[in-house]
Amino acid sequence: MFNKLYTWLVSSILFPLHESIKKHDTVRIHRQLMKSQWLSKQDIEKQADDRLHYFIARAATDVPYYRDIFKQQNIAALDISCKADLAKLPFLDKATIREHFDALKSDNSGTTQPFTTGGSSGTPLTFLLSNERVSHDVAEKWRATQWWDVDIGDKEIVAWGSPIELGAQDKVRMLRDKLFRSTLIPAFDMNEQKLLGFIEQIKAIAPKMLFGYPSVYALIAKTAQAHNIALNNLGIKVAFVTSERLYPYQREIIEEVFGAPVANGYGGRDAGFIAHQCLEGNMHVSAEDIIVEIIDKAGNALPDGQSGEIVVTHMATSDFPFIRYRTGDIGALDTKPCSCGRGLPVLKDIEGRATDFVVAEDGTVMHGLALIYIIREMQGIEAFKIIQKTTTLTQVYLVPTDGLTSEMSQQIEQGFKSRLGENVTIELLEVDVIEAEQSGKFRYVISEVDI
Image (tube, rainbow, N blue to C red; front, side, top):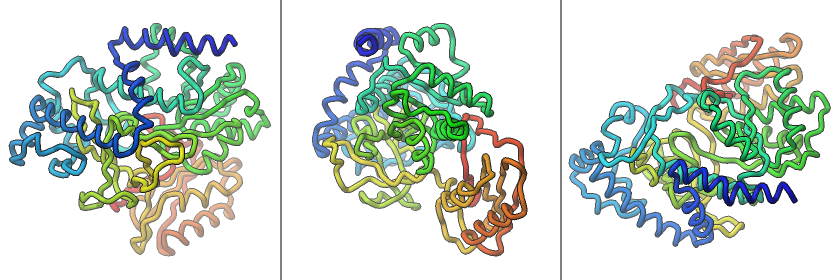
């Protein structure tokens, strides 16, 4: 009874007060989102088109970069009134943001602060973040949290690896986290001793939900299994994972060890919270705020059901607009509605970045999973990382349990050659540890070959 009352106190009083003090409009937006999710897909899209028209009009008037674009393209804001009309505008990417950073800030901008991505897929990107954007992103995450019958104020473990977050843990934030019953696990530099410490912390807290990188929770789960430590009796209701590609084997071990379903979230610091998984297993786009386009290699829009690059327009970014932003990720919009009854579009086949794919010697493109499964099924390999340097050279960094045997080396080489080509050089490099990216994320496959 105490836990329910305390959660109600946090979600109904303390958290709204916290957001009000920070001048965030989160509570009002969340209230609207809880209603709009049950509208039909057509009604949601109609409301999004209406909002898009207003959003683009503000950008065309207030943002120097887009004022120039509209002038150069000889188009008016009135020409952009629906998703299809966005094709009249150029794409936005990291290089463009860096080159036109000052011109992308609205002349009528409110308070903004610089924010930097983790840089796990290349050079970090700095952009400006406003209270408008933060309010909408938090409201969307809050809505998705409640889909799983958990709420702000329920006990939560957050496994995060970015030093950006860890460095911001000042006394005020630490007090807030304590009041909200959210505990941070600094999962940046991990070894077995630290992992066992995390496990004891999770057992002591007995959280209702987990949140963080799938690679971290999969590693914690693997360590718990190895030491025969039970974590499926703590009352955990859901494990929210985000910021990395969720591999099927990670979902499997997390759900098995923690005894709770995994709820995937897709998005990024730059593009925002794009989609969240419902109880039916589908990834719903935050369509009230975010318009998703799927494009082919030539930049042409693809129909629903076809896979291509995910491009997003975030309509809560008036102060520093993200319009037709290329995520570099691959996915498709589903043609079928979700059985959960929500009208929010479904994003499917999210396959990660183009650099998560590898190219065989004969030009065949395949997902990195084709190589990952060769190693993860082997005994005696603690960790690994695959880097495809060229179509004729792939490096494999390995952390073996008791040294790399000739049989293991032969198994890896033969498996890789069977997929990449018999003439491809497979360079095996035995190391003591596989470091996370600068962001704290783990990337198991990186291809430096253009697709």
